[in-house]
Length: 70
Image (cartoon, rainbow, N blue to C red; front, top):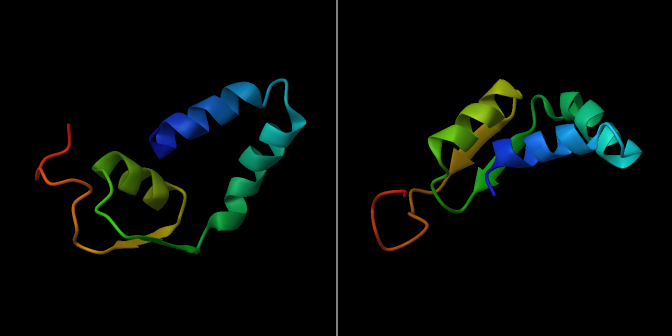
């Protein structure tokens, strides 16, 4: 599941779950944090982290043998 899909699920669930609502409210606290990935993440995930104000860095290794994401 991509990060944007996770946030969509949390947003929908936050209408009925106080825990999910707290997670959504707490996203502001992640601004300025660093996220390190041991693989190259998708451009969608990278854009989402940047929109949230999270600094992204990753090692230049692909997730699988093929060079392209599907």
